[in-house]
Image 1 (cartoon, one colour):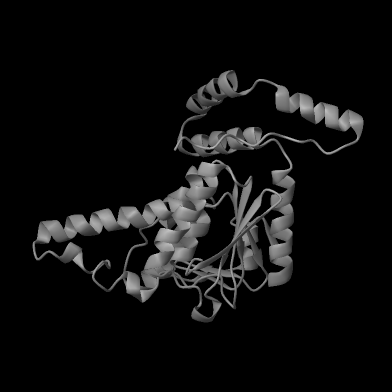
Image 2: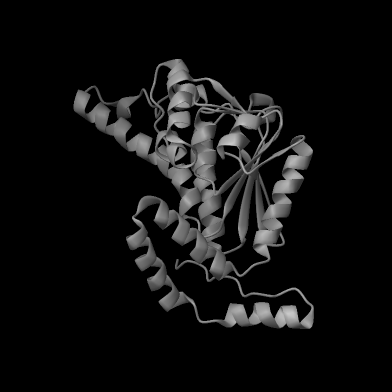
Amino acid sequence: MYECFEVSNSDGVAHLQLRRGDELNTMLPSFWEELPRIVEEIDRNASARVIVISSTGRHFSAGMDLSVFTGDNGLAAGGGSDDKGRRASALWMLVQHLQDSFTALERARVPVLAAIQGGCIGGAVDMVCAADMRYCSADAFFCVQEINIGMTADVGTLQRLPKLIPEGVARELAYTGDRMPAERALEVGLVNRVFEDHETLVEGTLEVAARIAAHSPLAIWGTKEAINYARDHSVADSLHQIAGWQSGMFVGSDMAEEFAAKAEGREPSFEDIPPRPA
């Protein structure tokens, strides 16, 4: 049992639901431990072929909970030291720890899909930017809230958002703290599709996940690796990377299964990717 998530796994799709809808799914200190632990466990055990992150209640998430800033281990605690340098170094390490919680979504060998209803605010934007794809309901909106509380966003939005949408649009969001509604998010490419309501959003996202899970998990892994690598490297380097991947991972058995299944009028069946070494 997790404090912030409800987790289920069916037919190759792991479904992570934020479960604190009455509290706007704010990100408690436990959230930052639970999310990477769940995702890394799924990845390590190869127990799912796709991960879907959805939510409950009126809003997807209102972002960081106040308790992340306060308390003995909060952003303002400075590691409990009175020394300026040590306090600064403690904050530096804590911010990177929070960043790693979302980078876990990128490190996972399987695609991660985010289903967003209502408000996606502050840290929630950081999170969904680390997902492979985003879908939302018609009432959804996105807000880089940090500028509205006098701070710079620091756990992924400013690094990932300008690579998902036009840079000028990302800058406008980050500088103004304005809300981007669902229709505009679709227009600029932040989300893949807008659904009528929360129920159809979750159903639709799970349906996309099921279609992905039906494909070769090794080919999907290679595709995610290649796209993530190409985002951060030159075309020449990225072509070199995929050539290396293919020379080692492409042996043709999954392709043979695809062709055999089509010829026989059945759904293909693929072996799961191997678990990560313990």
